[in-house]
Amino acid sequence: MRRPPRRRHAGFTLVEVAVVAGILGLLALTMTSAFEGMGQARERNNAQAHAEAARQALRHFLLRNKRLPCPDGSLYGDRGREADGASACPGTLGVGWLPYESLGLQVPVRAQRLRYGVYRGSGADLVAPVPGAVEGPDLEGLAGLSTALAKAATAAPSAASPYYAASSATAASTACSGTDLVNPAFVLVAPATDRDLSGGTHTGFDAPNRGFAEGTDTCVAAPTRPATAAYDDVVVAESSTALLGWLTTVSR
Image (cartoon, rainbow, N blue to C red; front, side, top):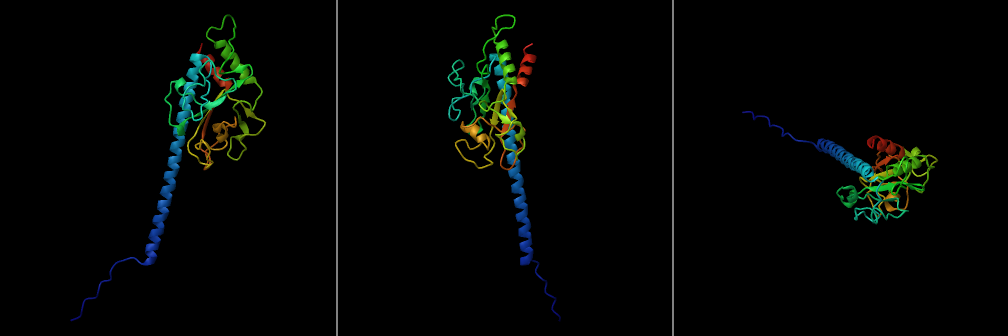
């Protein structure tokens, strides 16, 4: 009798195994990149929400107190309050940490704290505006604040106060130079991650905001600067003109 033919055992050749392994590796790499991108976007969205909430808190503080708060001048923002109290803020202190407790906000962990800058020009100190009078005594301080905002809006741009260069809205531009400097009434910088791996005391801030965070510079990136592989900070700046318009509308 003839023996039945032997069945060939199904299996993979080394070439087929290599092809499958390569495909799995590419899929894993793609998924990892996608997760990293999603994580970066989530962290930047959180920073954006944090900065926007702080901007609204600053507006409400301005409306209640007819001035902007003094920055928290401590090294890491652990104080959480205005430097030296509301009535004794050093005249030269225009950059520091957001005074969360003074704004009625909870102080976050160090890596998430916002850097805060406020305009304190000559005759237009938004932390300590000079009381003024239009038709009578400026009992609430509204006239003095309005005058200070109007002066700040028309003052010559200066690198002595927090500023950004309007021409640095793109990643390829030099952020802290130019003839089109802008001094906002206040500016907030929210760190996301250390995308440029610059290190330093406050590692979450990317250049050029690192100097602003370290207290060595008054320059910040333009608020419209897009996120890149090396930059994902969020900058929110409120102009004196916009703030004066908002104040006039809500105080009528």
